[in-house]
Each structure stands twice: as C-alpha cells, then as structure tokens.
Amino acid sequence: MSDLATYADKILSAEPVKVQRTEELNKKFTDIANEIYRCPFRNKNRREFKTVFESVEKMVIEHALSKLTGLAMNWQSFDHTNRDTYAWDVIDLETKKTFECKRWAEKWFSFNNKDISTFTKNIDIIDYFVSGKVFRTPSFYTVAFHLVADAKSFEKYVRPSQYTTKLYYDHHTAMKKGDAFFRDHVYFENGTAA
Image (cartoon, rainbow, N blue to C red; front, side):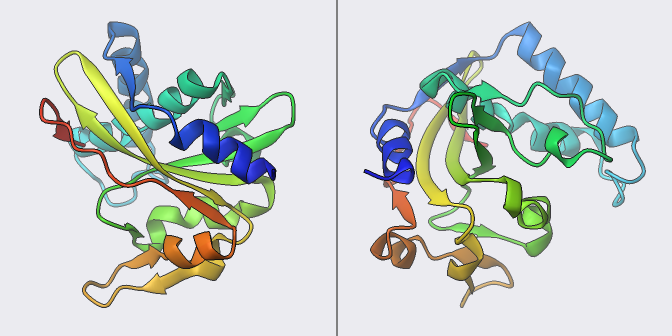
C-alpha cells in the first residue's frame, strides 16, 4: 500500500473530529489574526479583523488532523524568510512527510488561484494535500475530512469551473489515477459551516 493510501485510509475512514473551542485555542487564533491583520504584506487588501479572524479560525483543520493522526503541527513561528515555517501545516515526524490543510467549502474543492498560491509555490516541500469541512457550534469545531491528495500531482488535476471564475480540483480523475482519495460530505444538524 502506498503512503498516500495509508494516510488516506487513516484520515478518511475516521468519524468527524471534534476540537473543543477552548480559551487557549481562541487566544492562539486571535494572536495569529492580529499578526496578519497588522502586517501590510499579509493583509494587503486591508481586510477587517473579523474577516481575518474567520480565515485564521479555519486552521482548526490542522488541529483536527493532528488530533486524529498523532502527527505534529508546525510548531515554528512564522518567518517570511524561512518557508519551512509556513509552507506546511502538519508533519509525520517519523517519515518527515508534510501535509498542507485547506478548508473544503463547496461540493468540489474550488478556489481562486491566490487562495492556494503559498501551497503551489512550495509544493516541492509538501507531500500531501488534505481538505476538510469545518462546522462550528458554541463549544466545538467539528472537522469532516473529504480529500487526501498527492501534492506533487495536484496541479495536474486543476480545472476551470464551468459555473464561476474559480478553479477546482478534479478529485474524480485524480482518484482514477491513484493520486487522491475522497470521502463524501457529512452533514451536521447542530453546527454551522465555517
């Protein structure tokens, strides 16, 4: 079994992962959001703090992946001169395989080019791409993982949307070629999609 299949089996066969919305986690997200909000390079469009925070909050996918698999989250402080501090989110310390996590928002993994530009610029040091849908309740985030893909072949399966100006990752073709594994969406009655 390939590494991709092994990781996908562990990540996609599991039930959705609950991450408690603790004061510590909220503080971490607030601190990161403040750093981004105040940085003219990282907040070029002068987004409101609430928008930046909501974007940062989706980092809970990394926490859920780490909790589910026992893999280590990137512990390094952001340093724009060292891409190893920001290019990947989670690492298997035993195999040194790296994972980039992104939120799954729609029926397909769809995105604007700028949304994945850091990922595509650093694909040479990222091994796997993981995507999940985040649901919020007052006490928990719940993450349902949908996609585990080979990062090196990711761009080969990017297609223009027929309905919007976005692009999407064609996981159906990637699965046929053995470059991705997918699991259908899970609906949560008690949470709102984030």
